[in-house]
Amino acid sequence: MVRTIVGANWGDEGKGKITDMLAAESDIVVRFQGGANAGHTIINDYGRFALHLLPSGVCSPNVVNVIGPGVALDIEAFLREMGEVVAQGVPQPKILVSERVQVLMPYHVALDCYEEERLGKNSFGSTKSGIAPFYGDKYQKIGLQLCQLYYPEVLREKLAHALDIKNALMTHLYHKEPIDLDALIEKMTGLAERIRPYVADTDAYLMQAIREGKNILLEGQLGTLRDPDHGIYPMVTSSSPLAGYAPVGAGVPVWSIKEIIAVTKAYSSCVGAGPFTTELFGDEAEELRKRGGDRGEYGAKTGRPRRVGWFDCVATRYGCEMQGATQVALTNMDVLGYLDEIPVCVAYECDGERIERFPVTPKLEKCTPVYVTLPGWKCDTRGIKEFDRMPENARRYVEFLEKQIGCPIKMVSNGPRREEMMYR
Ligand code: GDP
Image (tube, rainbow, N blue to C red; front, side, top):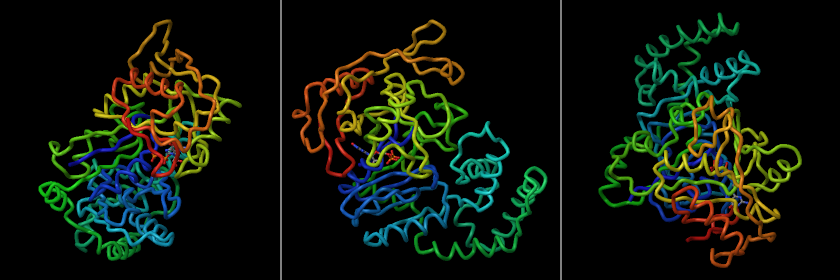
């Protein structure tokens, strides 16, 4: 059976924990999009890990982890992260990297940084990992697939062609030194050799696994609202984090996907720029930020303080709908135990009009939240293992969100650790 785990909101919903937890009962975990630009935090018996590029199954020794063709493969980041995981005591993970995956080049990172610098205050809040230039090149057809690195003539020809364009930008737009072709070829050839043991025809591997009835998890990065088509364009990421893209980016048939788990937090958090209707500021925000997640709400990749706010039913209903969620996992329930009462956004107001459907970006920018206030439960719920034993107001809170979102909340996470999970 194939299951997909995706984010319903702006990312950082706690997908890493859910994947790590479900990985323990899976055979294969696949990353299908994005690159080393975001992070999943997982906490288990080996310790705490901020994974950026590696699939979240790396801490489960029986799992085969796959980097699918839809990913942006930064080979150095891949090797570095693998080294870090093993250094923390995890047995050498089993990893297969698609021979079709495209390779993120050093110039993608450089151009990402220079462009953000050039844009100044109008920048997109990029993590400067080279993701936007990478996907730009992929669709402009001047990217390189990993397999091409093993054909020296192909590598030289393709890189020479790409550098004609990149060096024009480097020197004329950004006033930097041009990139040397021979040095780049040498570097990429060296990296290709180091990653060679992991390279495979992952499409064939996954197809065979599906025929054998293996359990496969497809793991998304970020969330619906960062999708280039359905998110808050242009404050989006450059590959689709939607479950609809998962079969393409992973390399599995559409019909194989049986479950889509959309993850959302019991409040909202958002890293990076863009309209965020329920955003909190000042002391109220600081309090929630400090208490959120496992160590406060700070980006796993950048360490930037995350923007935080109340739960947004409008955004999450849309987020789950666009994901095609079959169920929802609600995380960070334990975080809200300190509040007397909890506002929940049930609609937006825009130019005097009440709307319940998540609007296009220019309209969203003018929206203000319409809240209803629910009573808090004023106690620490960590350690409670069954949903029925949760305080009544906490149960009511979840039931209220479920009704608003229109999709069953089957998992409620009550702490950052793998085993802190309640099922409904
Ligand atoms: P991802 O990118 O969706 O995997 O999300 P992140 O891992 O970046 O952010 C989620 C944060 O919430 C991390 O700090 C997790 O350790 C933490 N977390 C996940 N579930 C829970 C939970 O139920 N309670 C608490 N307190 N923290 C959680």
